Image (cartoon, rainbow, N blue to C red; front, side, top):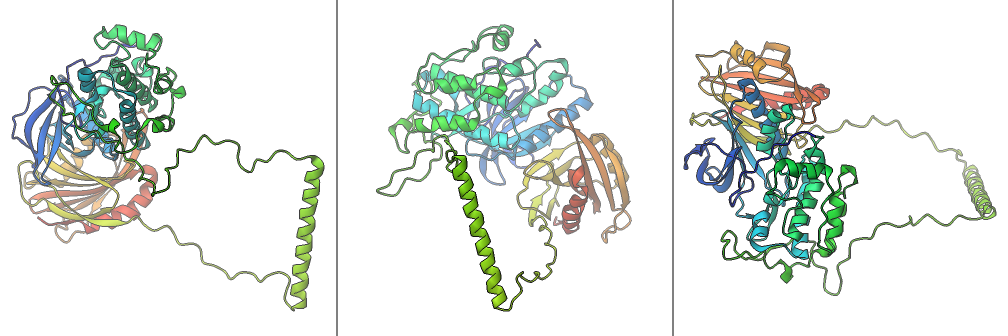
Length: 568
């Protein structure tokens, strides 16, 4: 059995969608990425700090997590960890669901990633259980259904949570239930720790296959959901959270699975999820089907409160609303219940006797012969050919329409506030945008505006280096790519006809190799226009999987790059 390192740092009350660890807190009122004003420290631990902040562009409250890299990490490995953090954030940004905390933005400042999330005034389920004890069946079903819905959305987007537990389930005073902490900070540390056989997790809720160092799959989240539901109905974790870590892990891996004393309708759901064989666990669809009859009708008093005691002033005893429900049936009608498990197919008739089947076939054949003879006789009498004329030749079907592009206006402003960062560019309508600040040892700091495809496989990037000239050259930027891009290999480099600066602009095509979370290599190709503009350098690039090289150049890059227009 491999050793598991588990963070046991206390988690204070949170009013955010996520939590992390910490080192030295940043001063309040600091402006991050030129727009996020830090207001109040909300939580801290070993991996980062969480702030309540204010987005001065959109004028809304947000939560900002400052991700801290483990101390003593070599520079090359630290760069790799930062890139992995950003890749993880890009993937999570694809998940959009009412029961999942939304990721808004990512910025890289002073070599540290800042993750900007939805702000939610909330208390964790762990704190509610500690204050009030176990939930009743209806309340537990409301929470479990919301978490299951959030996990289903994440899994469909290819995201595994890896640490489902009451501390990561938030309940707002208005009754909203959201799943948080999709492991951005935890994954940053995993890249370092897993090389020595050490992994992170919460020992009381960690799935056996993760505890033993096995592969992480979405089925691990099913165990976490079952363990969380166990805690909700029992009032305590399935394993002692205060016990010795190694002893707890040994019980998770080698011991018997704890059985809830609760005998209600949630017990079979818990036991169906907390199964050591990941492939034997209840799928989320079946979990929700079993929970549906336990959810009360909208407006029921059962939604009234997850009340807390007077000693816990973090949440007011306000009504809790259910997950989205279908509209009520019209007067005089009743809502249709969920369909039961399908029985025999309606056309699967009992087998017939051989004699009856033969007679039926013969009758059908006789009918078809008679119909054909009648049709032929009719056409002969009418002086027409028996066979219909050949259809006129048709043109080949048109090719599928190209991807729809819409004009986007964005700002590549920097933390230092240099002017001239505005631009417009066409981008696919369904791609997700986020902004990243980058620092480098040999180049000026830059701002990168990303648009990422829903599946995370392709992206459009506009990068601006303010005050690039006269100290730097395009050649310096191209050489720096070799240290920034894993598996970097140039396959095309040519001068770019550019009326603004015809002697300096360049177009390059290069390939890269990234390592995916499961350890497999992902080969991609990038097309980039390198454009000097006054004192700034702009880079417009499109990156796609290697098997989409032709279509990526034809359908995306050649349509997008020529339309790039700086407006500052």
